[in-house]
Structure formats: C-alpha cells, structure tokens
Image (cartoon, rainbow, N blue to C red; front, side, top):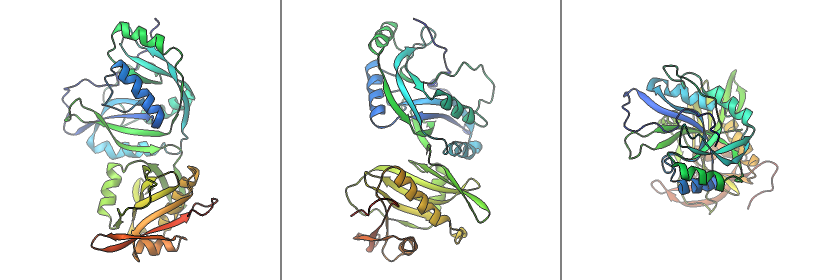
Length: 350
C-alpha cells in the first residue's frame, strides 16, 4: 500500500509534564449530527484511540502549548474566522499513513483549498510552537483509527474503499487537553459558527457579532459579572441545540444572547448588555442579528424569556416583541413571560 505524507501527531503522548503557565490546545473543524455519529461508528469498529477522548474532527492546528497569558489572544484569533462560510466536503474512502504511522483515516475531498486557507489563518502566533520543528505537508483528513494493527488496516482499507459521506463543516472549535482526567480527553472550550460573523459600525466603533454553541471563558467571565436576568422557566417543547450570539467591540464582549435553537424557534434565556454602552444601539443590533441568524436557519420566530414587567421586557417591547405566554413564578416568586416576534419575512408563529 502507498503511504500518504504523515501530519504531526494529533494525539499527544500521555504523562507529559506541562508548565503551570501553559495550556495544551488544538483547533479543529468539527463534525456534528449524523455525520459525527457515522464517523464514531467507524472509530468504534477500529478501536480508535481517540474515541471518547475527542469528538470527530478535522485538525487545523495540531496540539501546541500556549502561554496562559496568551489565551485571550487565541480566543480572538478563533473568532476572527467567523465570517468564513461553512465548508462542504465528502469524507472517504479510507486511507492510511502506514507504514510510518499505524493510522487509518477518511480522506477529505471538496473545497480543500478553503480548508487550507483557514489553517493558514490560524497557524500564527500564539498558535505556533515556541521552537520551530519540521512541518510535513498538510493532509486534510478525519482520523478513525490510531495504533491499528497491520491486518486490520488492510481490512479497513478494503471494506471502506467505497465509503463516501457528504458533510458540512460548520464550526471551528478550540479544544484544550484535560491532563487531570483519565485518558487526558480534549474539551471544547470555545467555538465559532462559520458564516455567523458580521460587523456593524456604531458610534464610530465597529461592533462584531459572532455565533457559537458555548460561551468561551473570557465571555463567560464578563457575562457572569454583568447584572441581568437569567430565566429557566419551562417553555414549549421545542428544545434545541445550545446557541450563543455575542457582540464585541475592540475584541471585548459588550452583549450576549444565550439560549437554544429548536426546529421552530430561537429561544433566549439569558441576555446581557454593557450598561456603559447604553444608547449606542448595541442591544437592538444584537437582537436583530439574532433574528437574522434564526431566519437563515429556517426558524419562524425568536422568543425571549424574561421577568414580567422587568427591564428586559421593556427593552424588547420597543423592538416589537409581545407576550406570547405568562409562565410560572421564578426566582422568589417573580412571574416570567415569553416574549415573541416572528422572524422578518416569515409568517407569524402561534
């Protein structure tokens, strides 16, 4: 069999001592939904060493140690690619880096030039090794088996010779290795939804809007320290995937809408706005950006959960939101409400 060029090892060795002022990071395009489940099935069949340690992914920046003091700079670097569009690819057939490395992977076909461009934008300081090392050619791939015995490699290549799985790579994730937990898994600590990035000039300053599935550490610390309403009352049955839309000025968070995206509605349970920037229009632009994101995903309405007659209800009322329901008491008996507005261009939702 012909061996492909071997990328740098994507799974760091265990038991390596790290300095307390460094974090072990990698950056990847992640798979989700059915495509992730199918790839995990292949990983399980091959006894992939990454199964349970890291989600199915295509590595853009291999593991690298980054100084803790540079971590916020890394977060801003990840956010900088939010304006790039999702990448359509086809995964398969299976290939190997053997005999040099006993790894089985799925080939990646499609817009690989854009994947390489994303990588070039991210493999910059501080996401580069402190000491330069030999770089092998970049091979876009999704690993399904590491440390695979030679007979199993041959069998996998034969069985998956016709494997072809279309996939959309729509998120870039920053992962950090947990060196305390068993098997040292990789945790997603920040991500961005590709195609979600927008920027608007406000008050002489540019406001950037970035969508993600989680609050990154910097934004979470800001949101936790900013006064506001958190509502967790039950509402409907349209449970969905976690979703966050954040507004940034000069790289710092100034507004957050956190909730979930269902099949019909985007539901926001936490809204934070920087009071020092009141009057600059950031809050209304954050809401409109959320409506645009929801409409682009085919949703019919946006719903905010808020304390009845509180400041959030008053703010949203000026933006065309109306009470869709009064919910059970919350937080010391305060009534909460669901405030809804159809996404522009769609029929009103009941």
